[in-house]
Image 1 (tube, rainbow, N blue to C red):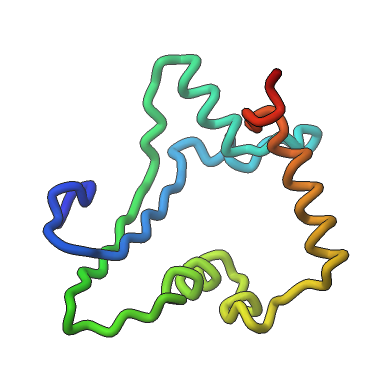
Image 2: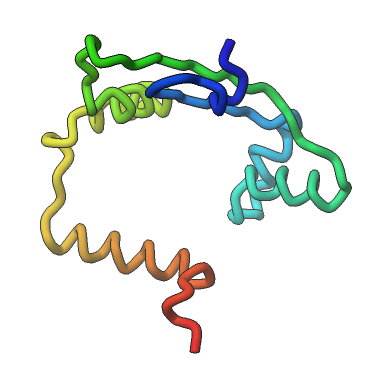
Length: 119
């Protein structure tokens, strides 16, 4: 057990999986599309309660003799999220128009966090 990983010597790859304790807050209500996870975290913070839930940490120590697949993280997350079709980055490319559309939607959703727009 390496705890939070800060005491680990050398390089390692870590995947941390977390599920909040309040599963009702995760799913959210049918008329609320703001995201159940955000709701669970907000409620816990407002009530001064730490929403620990369940967590699992998977660690793969790396050393100079170990040949590490740089796509390992993508493969693990694709499997965990049920997105097997996105495991290989070469097979999920986008047209220029699709990429530009995704970029614009991303900018709109995260506009409140974009410090470059501040005057």
